[in-house]
Length: 303
Ligand SMILES: [Zn+2]
Image (cartoon, rainbow, N blue to C red; front, top):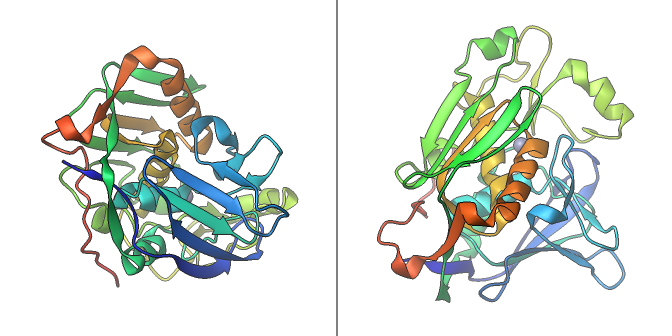
């Protein structure tokens, strides 16, 4: 049986936005049971907020951005959301002094460290999980993503980059988070980008804060960083992103995700489709579940 979780105490850090390049302070503050994950823009008058939900995702080009009804934005939420999913944090206020969540080292690992440092508080309510009862699928051209019934929480991903440095790595991967640890199998995989896309990104004011300290960067032939953290860091990062994007549903999932060349946009189409197909799943309480779909580890491995 698993209780809902928040943090024991507030904790803060600073960093820069991957896309904006702007300095930002991030403060994580405990929240009551059944609150969900609420982002707060403390730099704006009245400290407006926006909850992480599938329908509040307003932009998913190269990152996942939340937009509230007044147009207030919080961008690049996916790695923090992934860390919160991996640690089973249900309820939290995430306060920011700028539009973008700091990129830190490009992975979810620094956020796990923050969560671990603040400590996990178990709350007086049971967790709820979204139990997938039949397949829910979305497609856009040759890209697709689906959720299907399964024990535990399995996440599978296939990428197809015809790039010499990526072809050398595994481009298909599946993890079973009821058996494997999020912190050691996924959390350290960094975001990645191609030099050839930098000009396009800069013309859209994206990627302004990107560098070899917070992203794996590839030219036409090779990885420019000294080394990779995992042999299959590219596909592993896509799994990290998918775990974060799925968590905008507000609950862990009992089922199997599969993404083929998917990204934030198609991941968001899928979670929106989940909301539409109410008969394809049910919300189950952890009170009635003997085997949790995900094992939340607190012992982390850092190096
Ligand atoms: Zn990412």
